[in-house]
Amino acid sequence: MADTSKNNCSTIASQECIDKIRAKLNAKQAQHVIQTRSMTVKSRSTKKSSKQKVAPIAAHQAKSPPSIKGKVPTSTTDSTNVEVLTVLGKTVHMVDPDRKVFVIDLLSPETCDEIRMMADNHTLNAKKDAEVWRTLYTYTKMDLPVVEVKDMVSKYTDNILHDVKKIVGVIFGMRREAMRLRPRSWKEPHLLLYQALDGKTHHTGIEMHYDGCDVTWQAMLTRQDEYEGGGTYFRSLRKTIRLKQGQVLVHPGELYHKGIDITYGVRCLLICFTDGMNPKILDDSRQEDDDPKYETNVLVCG
Image 1 (cartoon, rainbow, N blue to C red):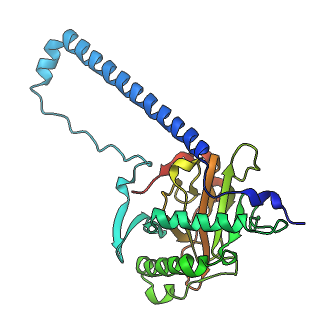
Image 2 (cartoon, one colour):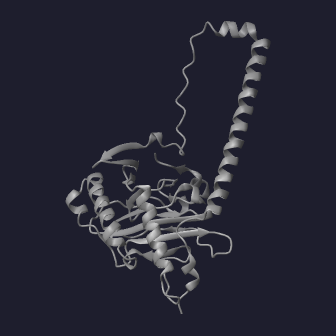
Image 3 (cartoon, rainbow, N blue to C red):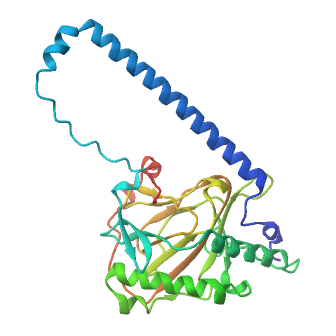
């Protein structure tokens, strides 16, 4: 018998959920401002005290050549060290040029919301005993093949796949081969839904794995104020990539990665496993390289 408990799922967070997340974000920002001001006042007080106590030494040091300080390493949460390209009119963030991991600014917020609304309408109109959202690949998330949603393939996903293939061809230097990329089964592309909400079964993330296809892409359909946590962690990169709404993450299917758990809210993506072009990129990481501390190295592009 179908598990119809999943048929009351929504890809769009409720206003109550969004308000809670925004309140937490505002509280964190306020706390950060207080801490920054406190540190500034303390720093000024220390400098003033230093000037009063060691005035003669300071005067002597002022005559010396200024010391040359080394460049401060860029934080892994900072995207300024990521090369940004314009490919076929789209902005592409090269997260790892060697492993061909990159993020495309591709979809508009309106497109993302329309795809989610189509999925929700499909769920609402499903027969009572029909299983709409189910665990196609893993029990820690829910999936819905887009072919089952009326008009979604012809209106959206065919065009998205075509655009991604063209950009993949440029980035990999394999334009002709990239156009041969095809979804690996009837289940592709599919919508993926994570949820961590009171009163509902939690589906929050996915364990470390590799897709085994040639090229994987995932499009973020959800706004950042609709969930907490989340992101895609790559073991070989030792960092978590967190997408903004409308961005598409592309990577070779052989790279080991995991879906970081969301702690609250709703997170929905459009995923596609494709075959037909061998990227000739294998994962160079090892299982012993796994370390939870690296998962906190979060990169947000743009």
